Image (cartoon, rainbow, N blue to C red; front, side):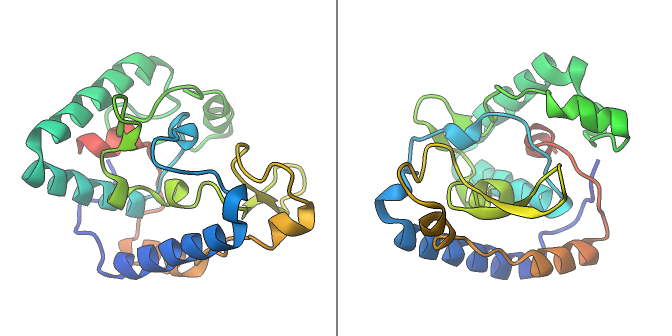
Length: 205
């Protein structure tokens, strides 16, 4: 599995910058950004997470075990059920949880567990059980952010499909959320692990 180490102290700076950027984008967007507690649009579908996300999720699970052991156990049960259901088609190593990095693995991952709810999602409340420790992909979902397109490798603006209805391209662009990619890359370099996995595996380690 991915690195076994403590969450770097610099992650708090990264989280603070990202959360501040999200707040700023939300203020700029106003009613165009409809994200709110209980909206679970971003909680379905598998996505890759990096080693820093893994460490953050582990810290979140440790904190939850201390504060609410039963809630932590419910997440573990959901994560185990998730892997049992989708594991047979996982394009990676079920023992380590690591995603495969071959072209065939990447192609298979495009259609893998696209409609599956995240194990951290509480189906009764529609809330994330480790919200304060969620991966970066979760933290930036909603506002317009730059993503790499497969067609020409350029970075286009993308946002939640539920948001910005009626907004022009210029109005969407004015709400862009700028992300500290360089800082995250530096922290990952410090960790020294470029491999990826999924949330379900990270919650169990």
